[in-house]
Length: 294
Image (cartoon, rainbow, N blue to C red; front, side, top):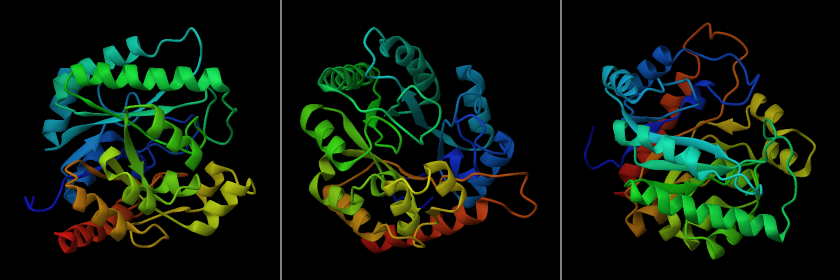
């Protein structure tokens, strides 16, 4: 890979592989990882539990077979429930990080419900506990040489602009800039990148059809139905200002991963090339933007 181009990784959900029950048809790890390498990606996020082998040596062997690194992965956690301590679970998870060389722990503050179509409101005590847990997890990960980041995500406890700002102001955790979830949640990802580039340590690069996103914001369409209808677009084909985001990050000296992540739902085994076509489009577009920025 051209050493002048920053690190580009893949995420299994671009192939429809997701932790949500009944999300859709699940492609095999063999196919997904093979196609990641065909696109020229350098690494993969872990994907949902069971996508990669849980035993660290076996995981390392699978990744080596496909000439891929492990970035880390999306870890949904309950962070706002009294009496529930998320640290032991993450402490165990970080053992596999050490074995695979992964260095980014992507956290999301889930509601405790399945899926991302609804969420409760947090009170002051709930927020205090959530923010405290974020700082505890950041410190725990740092002890292992891992960067913890919070992923604002539709249908979680940190979704909209006010909630993102609350985390920035009252927690030390860095952010995963998910360009799609931020936009759907009402935050302009390019503006957030301009305002707080120093807090961004990881990116999930996706593009969004803003018309469908507005229907999710207003409650006219569920998040899952919008994904099924193609709300996520290949980079350059939607309404996210990818060029501005890359420019703001580059000006700050961002050296983290750019993870191509276009949430997809498959109804069956693809007859043709399938999701890899969109990943190819996104990869080529991002490489072009990164070259121009350098």
